[in-house]
Length: 223
Image 1 (cartoon, one colour):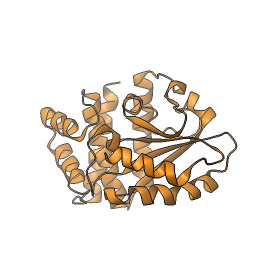
Image 2: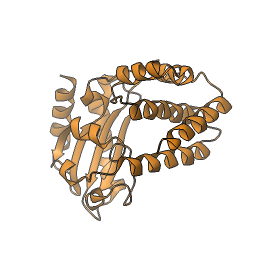
Image 3: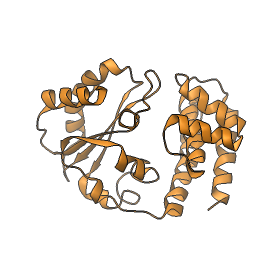
């Protein structure tokens, strides 16, 4: 009911938006493991080539935030990309993880709010290729977010989730945690449990950085 009510609200308040090819709801709210106070509400705005992203996002964001307000999400996250870049998200535009390493979850857990479905435009990547690119991105962000404990906690949580994913987990939070427990990785379990507990920031920067570097190194050895 949460999903249906949100979609109805957005459709009623937005209508047609020039330059917006599609608006898609995806992630935990569609997957069924949304946690108030922990999860985001995730939208993907697909823009017509040449459209003004700032203008479109400034128009749709207030509506999406208003329609999502009762869900008590951490934030309403709006990713965007030009339609023509969807033929190769890894090398064109921005390589969002939901379009690359987690693209199967996106295919299976999305709802078209406005416009057309775009999943058939997405390519099938070689898993080693997209995993390598994702690990590179994590290490780049590790340097980028140096000094920002909040973002380092998020990055460490994503590293723990990716570790579970490559060991057979789907993206449901309970399954990620179960897989980490099966692996016996105590630090990964503590980091992911802190994320589930309202994104608590318990850990110091050096611990988080070392955790990310070591786990990325382990995952890279498996390539």
